[in-house]
Image 1 (cartoon, rainbow, N blue to C red):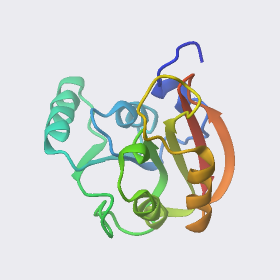
Image 2: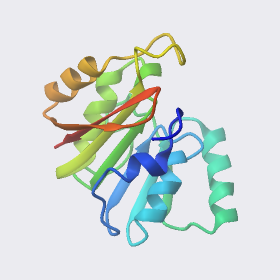
Image 3: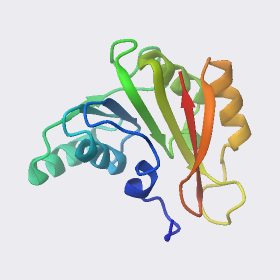
Length: 173
């Protein structure tokens, strides 16, 4: 990666995605990964899930302007049981970018990702490197993420390049 900050296109280039996959971005905010996923999964569907109504409203406007129609916006609390509102075992891919460091109940978010993933589904967790001087102070280490994911039954597959300030961990259900 040539730049330091998170580039969804470069990160997603490292995953084996099919155009007909069903995916979600947990904690989508302005939809950085949501939009990139939707363009790649043009025969599939992407769920943009966030708890904040304001960011979802802004994303909805952006999608209308860009003419993207394979994204479903969902307001949900991912720290609550079945908080994504999605059915169990329905997704091929879940992306959780820069969410865990700010969550109170990190394990609940990973549990929800596990619940909505199909067997052999892929979970990508991206968060802040502990080693970089930039970013938030309350970071979560790679090892802590790996341990939580393992506890929930996810298998660590590989670490991918998420730029200078982040790590990207790929798990499979």
